[in-house]
Amino acid sequence: MIFSLEALILSKEKLGEIDLLIELFTPKGKIWSVAKGAQKSRKRFVNLLEEFNLIKAHLRKTAKGKLPILEKADLLFLPESIRKDYKKYLMISYMGEILSKISFSGLYIEYFSFIKKLFMEIEKGNLFFLLKPFFELKILKFSGWSPEFFQCVKCGYKPKKIFFLSIPEGGILCFRCKDGNSEKLDLEIVDILRSLIKMPVELESLKKLEKDLEKAIYIKEKILKISEKFLKYFLPFELNSLKFLKDFNWGVNEAKDS
Ligand SMILES: [Zn+2]
Image 1 (cartoon, rainbow, N blue to C red):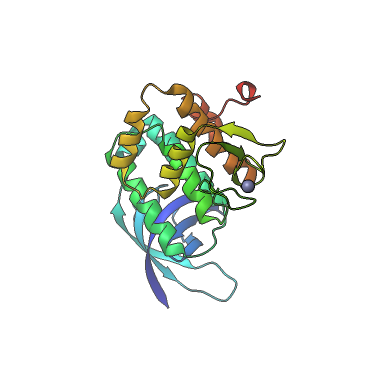
Image 2 (image 1 turned 90 degrees about the vertical axis):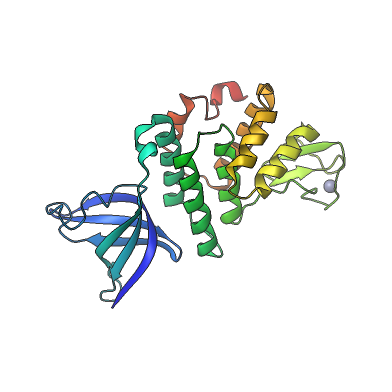
């Protein structure tokens, strides 16, 4: 039985001498599939199986417990500028690595359309500094670890002016609930975190937010730090691509951190 679905190629690996193992991100979840003979014969999949291509995958179910076979792939979207622009490539690789490592809870179709739209926007647009925290906060949300920025995590009170942030508690605390692990946070920063977590994939809004923060380097760095810390705390896996982002001042410098 063949079934077809849209898929983003997350990774590929050699499987034995001739086959490729392809990791697909699809509206039905992540699927590992086997592209028979794809190492040797390039004809069937001419450059289709490159990372971050969006394809229509035609998969054949095999015996229970075995991986489906990728029979055919039609190209839907080829990310060209992502391959040419090193900075974009690094960001997409970072996103791809996270997608490959996390497990999602809930509706896959929603995450798929989010990621698809995001990748397409990145392909056609300029890259924004806030893209990284935007993506990280959304990923936390999708994996069931959404940080709480609207009310005190402990008592539910909605502070108006005075906020404390606790990463282990998963969000903001009010003055009464603050503890030794929390730090004071300005309303301005809380507001940006709130907009980022609510914002749909609409890079125009992201661009506007970034423009407003043009000179506020301290705030931008703070936002970057907070979202990365949340991600590392709740999704504690090694992220190899993060160190490359640091060369662009995109990652949090651990030494500067304390
Ligand atoms: Zn409280």
